[in-house]
Image 1 (spheres, rainbow over the protein chains, first blue to last red):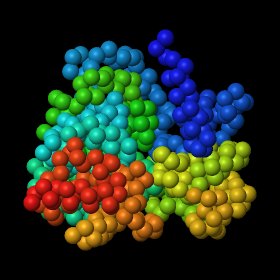
Image 2 (tube, rainbow over the protein chains, first blue to last red):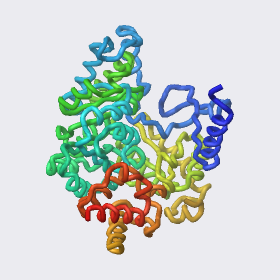
Image 3 (cartoon, rainbow over the protein chains, first blue to last red):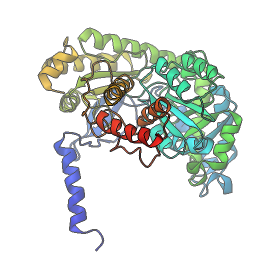
Image 4 (cartoon, chains in turn green, yellow):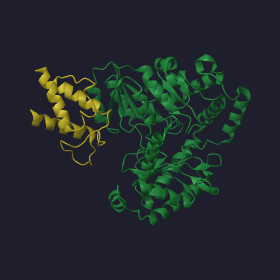
Length: 415
Length: 85
């Protein structure tokens, strides 16, 4: 038997170690479509409970929009269920290319290539365009998928302190001898909800002859006046060399992602990026849904405008209640609790009050920075937000953390 | 040279990797195994030392173990400076 008692015991001990450290993650089963109001089975086997979802990436509330569902049904009827092939053999339909063209126009780039996910886009892009003679300079808080993609690439990798433009300039000078320099950042940082200084980064990249890549997964569809992303908010549309993004969040929330940017870089991804070459692309039914999403958000900014108002209302409410928040102006509003167990206990107490919001702790965020990450949606109505604010306030009082500083909370609950 | 080198490395690591509210470093603080410096971020320290002392540290010598404290880094640099003559 290959899977010996010794092997099993070793893995069981690792799992117990995760449990003992208070870092064990458990899934909660949702029995309804993704929306502001959901029905949840938690813990497993428990009766269904109706709760308000405050932690989905469903920023525009399009995950279960009737027009998107209808378009997906039509896509299923007219283009079938699966392709049974990678793109370059017989896995490309007209609608795949149509979606790429719509994304190119929406993002203000030169070309776009679809990937099964943004994780795959990030896994493939670096190896496709860089060599050992190049350097990647990334923000220290970029998403794990970028870190993994960078690891798969032979280029040298250096990092900068989070959003520190002086540090970026030093690094661009330090690596001046490299063939190409690629600066890498998230657009909106997923755990903190703050926005990259893309205008300053683009200027530095221009000054030091470097390329700029942004992962706009937590921005595409709603950041910027018309929702094009962080580059629109920062006034640098057309200056991004590479944008990677996902359709798994605001843009319908199903799956899929893309690399969009300079024509040659996208073409090299088509020729060399391994997740594109060795995996089926997005299923036709999903492509049809994302095409409808692109139509909806290209015609009107109503949803992103409502999201902006909702997020401002929510942030103001939590601040007035006395929580410690990460500063920002995006729909990601982290409620800082610092201690991993406290984050989990607060999450459970919120669930009892009918609010679904998850605790995040190491290794998803650094040690001693545990939090409840709340995420606002255009699918939230005022009554959702008011009920959630009342529940947060009640739970905050129970744990005696309202009006308390970071130091107070750490003194009471530990790091 | 050793004392001066120790302070140069300590100051660089402090400025490059520590946040404003971090605990101060000592010469023996475990940098990589202690989670202060990740192995990616070691690159800039290596390049800084190579440029400053005119040495080349091969990748197989620039291990996380060899970069795990200020004292260890100083020993490594001194070895390559001596080799250079």
